View 1 (cartoon, one colour):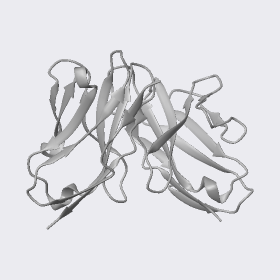
View 2 (cartoon, rainbow over the protein chains, first blue to last red):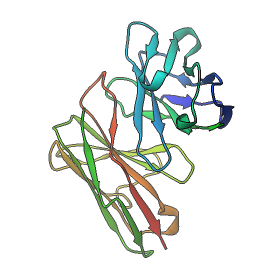
View 3 (cartoon, one colour):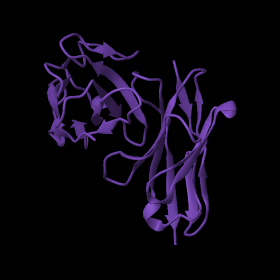
View 4 (cartoon, rainbow over the protein chains, first blue to last red):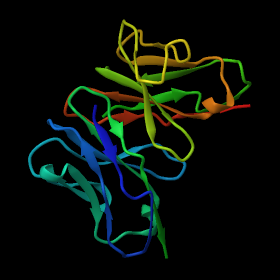
Length: 112
Length: 114
């Protein structure tokens, strides 16, 4: 069964700082990878997804992620965070028809 | 994309009682799932709701505690039975239309058991 590891439990950044959140998965076959965001009091929203093709994926709100197959990683990045990016970020993986399996999440706090 | 509506959005229940959560998708979907998100935690898959047959439960979840129905391709229910305070959580319905698609989520049902 696949699993997802998110290395950072809580990240605190100042506005305009760069962001990178780590995500590693364990599965040797073809995977679909996702980053979801959950703003305080709101439901999960899809930030970006990777199915195939260009391993550098661009999502909404200036986020991007890079799939590195050799490292089983799918790290999320943003060059300059804003206060409004304060949220919980979840990495998830699936293999075709299987349900998404989520990492434990990373809480991002952006301070002025 | 799919829009998922869950009812109720929140409830406070007495221990020992049961609550049924409804999930309605605005289009026919291949796959429907139920997750639990405990306070400050990630999403844990409870089961896959199979249309016209018994749900497929993950390790640690059983049908007697979390009976699930899925009578058609757009609707599912999850019942939390004989509740205890440990069942206090957010319960989320999710759907996918097939492979190579993302999962969509309802807004969740926030359950508090007292």
